[in-house]
Length: 188
Ligand SMILES: CC(C)(COP(=O)(O)OP(=O)(O)OC[C@H]1O[C@@H](n2cnc3c(N)ncnc32)[C@H](O)[C@@H]1OP(=O)(O)O)[C@@H](O)C(=O)NCCC(=O)NCCS
Image 1 (spheres, rainbow, N blue to C red):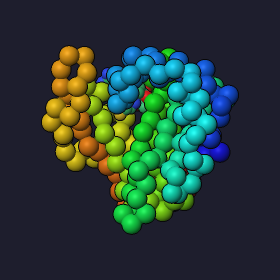
Image 2 (cartoon, protein in one colour):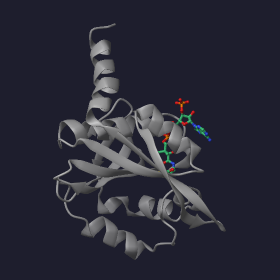
Image 3 (cartoon, rainbow, N blue to C red):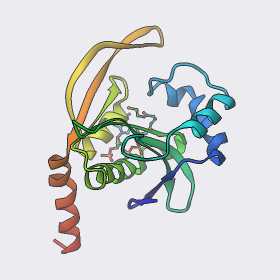
Image 4 (cartoon, helix red, strand yellow):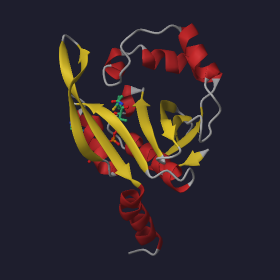
């Protein structure tokens, strides 16, 4: 288990099926992800059951829980490239009641710390759709920088949308978060 300040990150389990099924069929959630098609329980069982174990080569898939054990979302590191020391991050708080309360930021910072300090990654990147202002604000807060826009990269709801490429490097993470943690520890 990875411990953040207000979240814990644990491996996903078959017992998470009903929540994962609900979230992946909630259009308010999936419109923010590249997840266009409704998925069945069987699809989700397959997704939960057939993934490789968390590892460097296989990537990392985790459940996001509040400190009192409520499973509110999932996140992952995929497309891990050993030569480039890079991976792509995905995150979904599926429980809408928990949006905008800092859980995403805490979970992301916790996963970034694991990616940089335990997996020895150097670059973690992602895509965010241009309409996803909450995600964009959250990623900026975590230290991601906008690197460019893929124009009309995604089609949904009757039109094309740009996709924003964002990334954070290990030295940027350390400058922002490790320095802040050290200052907290010494009470500055
Ligand atoms: C994106 C997501 C992970 C962010 O997690 P979260 O817990 O909701 O975000 P946080 O509360 O940590 O931070 C959100 C920030 O955006 C701000 N925000 C919220 N709604 C906003 C909006 N409509 N426009 C601009 N900023 C907004 C908040 O004020 C907060 O910043 P602050 O702490 O400086 O005030 C989560 O909302 C989510 O999973 N949404 C659905 C799926 C999704 O979008 N996944 C990401 C795909 S790229």
